[in-house]
Image 1 (tube, one colour):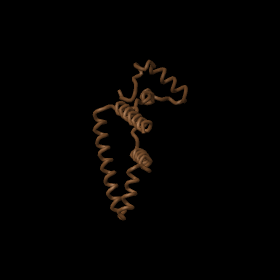
Image 2 (tube, helix red, strand yellow):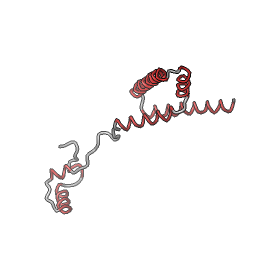
Image 3 (cartoon, helix red, strand yellow):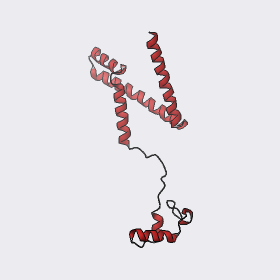
Image 4 (spheres, helix red, strand yellow):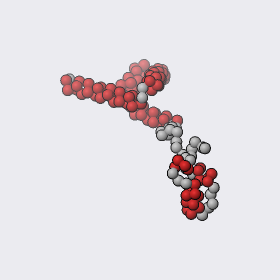
Length: 142
């Protein structure tokens, strides 16, 4: 028996019913072996694996938009203007961003091996909520 097909005895349909149904609907005389192969195939994983380009593009756009106008970009702009060595500042800031991204990826993969994705999502949501409350509290107090 193939793993991707259901035996006729278990499915509740007799072999004769399948042969008659296939013969009537298609006017072809199909054998029971072919009738078995038209049974639905159950996929191993419910989630489809994302392509490398989709993951790369999503990551690039998310990080790019998050970094526009933040304090790191402004600091880099000021350092470049002050030092008159834009390429040295670029290399230094790029190395720093690569290092922090590497730490984030390593920490993320370590966490993913120990916690479920739902736990990570809920924890991130709670942390962002706490940070938002702290920022609102500072605005109202100051």
